[in-house]
Image 1 (cartoon, rainbow, N blue to C red):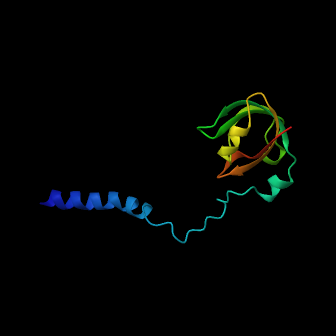
Image 2: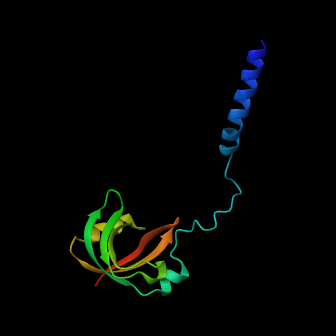
Image 3: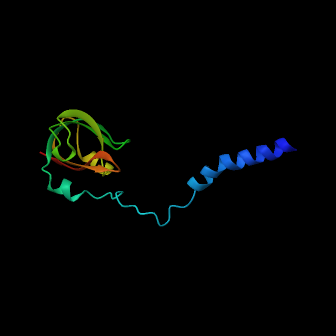
Length: 116
C-alpha cells in the first residue's frame, strides 16, 4: 500500500506541469505576433533579388538577394516564407523582383514582392 501512495504522489507531481501548460491563452497579450509589416519594413528600401525557386505548397520562395539592411543580412541565396502565399502564383523562377522583408513571428519573411 505504501508503494501505491508513493506512485500516486509521483504521478501527480509529474502531471502538474502539463496541466498548467494546457491552460487557456485567453487574456494573454499577443503583442509581437502582428502579421502586418512593421513601420521599419515599410520605410526600408526594397531589395533587388532574383527568384531561384518557388515552393507554393510550402509558401516559400528562394531568392538570390542583395543585402537586407533592415534585417542586418548580407547578400546571399536563401529560402524565405512569404506572407501572402497566394501571390507566388504571379511569379516565375528566374524573374527579377524588388522585395520588402520583415520579421514575422521572429523569422525573416517576404512581406511584399513586385516585378522589377
